[in-house]
Image 1 (cartoon, rainbow over the protein chains, first blue to last red):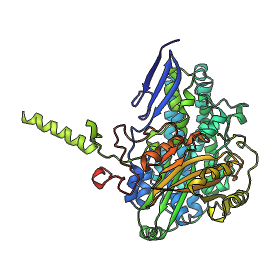
Image 2 (image 1 turned 90 degrees about the vertical axis):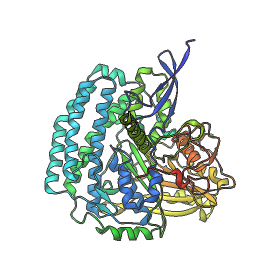
Image 3 (image 1 turned 180 degrees about the horizontal axis):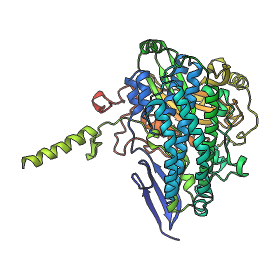
Image 4 (image 1 turned 135 degrees about the vertical axis):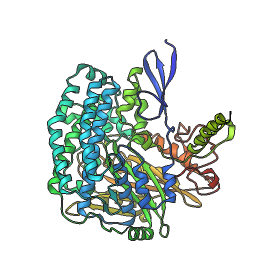
Length: 408
Length: 183
C-alpha cells in the first residue's frame, strides 16, 4: 500500500479565488478523503446588522458578495417585505428581475471563464472576460456602478429603466446572441477541455438531494430544482421559467464538472430570453411604493415578525431570514444562507477518487463564494498567546515601525 | 435512519392543505402558527406558500418525519435567536422542490430549546446536508446537537474562546469591549 499523505489546498492558493482550506488525504495522486475548513474570511455581517435599521442593512447585504450582490439584496428585501407585509409595485418587480438576470449573466460568464483558467485554457478565459464586459457596461448604464448597484430598496427600486438603458439592454441581448456561441463552441469542441472536466468531481443525483446541493450544482446532477420555477417570485410569476438539466439536452446527467459547465452556459441563453421578455412586457407605473425613507422606516418600526426570502441566485437558492421587533428600529436578527454554504457540504464527496491536480477545478466547479458563506464578528481572544489582529491594530503596528525607523 | 429520496423529481406535488391537515392531525391545531401565501406578477395570483410550524423539542424529530412522508425535505438553513429563557431554532425546509411549476412550498419548524438543557437531536443521519448549519448554531448559540459526528468549529477561528457564544444575548454572549471594528 502506498503511504498516505495529507496536503492542504489553501487557505491561499493560486487556483482559488478566495480563502478556504481543503485538507486532502492522498494515496499517490489519488484523493481518498477530504476535510474542508472555512472560516478565514468571516466578517460578522449578521452581527453588525443588529445595530442597523433595514435601510442600512440593504447596503450591508450588498457587500456580502462582489458577484451576486444584488441577489443578496433582493433575498434580504423579500424577507423584510414578508415580515412587514410591504407591497412592491409591478414595474419594480420587473426591474428587480431584470437586474437579477443581468447579474446571472455576468456571474455565469465569469465562472465559465475562470473554469477554463483553472485548467490552463487561457485563451478561452480571456474570451469569456471580454464577453462579460458587455453586461457590466449595461449594469453601469443602469445604476452607475459595475459591482454593487444600489438599485433596490424596501418596497421597490431606486432607478428606472430609461429609454437609453432599454436600448443598451436590447443591444446587449443582440450582441450575446451573435457572440456567445463562439465561446460555447471553443470549449465544448476542445477534447482536452472535455477530458479535464468529464467524469471529474462527480456528485450523483441522490447525493445532491441528501446533501442539499443547490442551483447549477444540483441541476448538473439532474435535479430539476430552480426557485424561479418552483416558487415564482417578483416578475418570474409571469414567465414560465424551466429548470435547465443536462438530461433534457444531452440525454444524461453525469453530475460532473463538465455538466456544471454546460448548465451554466445554457442558463446564459435562458437569461437572455428572460431579459428579452422583461423588456417586451415592462409594465408602466411607480417604481417604489413609498419614496420617503423616514415613512418607510416608521412603517417597518411597527412591524413584528419573521420573514423569509428565498430566491434563485446565480449559484443556487439564496435564503435570508429576518426578524423585526415592533418598537425596535433595527433589525432584531438576520440569517444569511448563501448558496455556497449549501454546496460546500458536498465538496468531500466530489473529491473522492479524483487526482490532486483536479482539486482546484473541483473546488471552483460549484462557483464558490467564500465571503458569501462566512459572516461573523472579529473579537479579541488573547488567551493562549495567539490572537486575532484587527485591521486598526495592524495599521498601528505598521506606523509604529515607521516611527521607530525615523528615530534611528 | 435515512429518508428515501424517491420523492425527488416527482411529476406532481400535493397541495399545502393536505400537508397542513396531516400536521394538525398529528400535532394539533397549535402546531400551525402561520400560513403565508405569496402573490406576485401582473395577475397578483398566489404563486407559493410558506408554512410556519412550531413544535416542542421532544416531538421535533417526529415532525420532520411527518414532513418526510410527503417528500424529502430540502433543507435550506437553520436560523436562531436567544429569546431569554429559551434559544429558538428555526429549521427552514422546502417541500416538493422538484415537483413542477409553483408546487414547492416553504416549511419552517420553530423549536424552543430551554437554556437549562441546550441539547436537541441532530438531523445529520436523516439529512447530511445540515452539517454546516448545526456546526454553526453550535458555535454561535451554544446548542449541542446529539448525533452530530463533527463538532469542530466551522466559521470561528481556531484560537476562539469557546465560552463566548457570539449570537447569544446573555452572559455567554460577546461583551461590548470584545466588539471592535464593526464599521
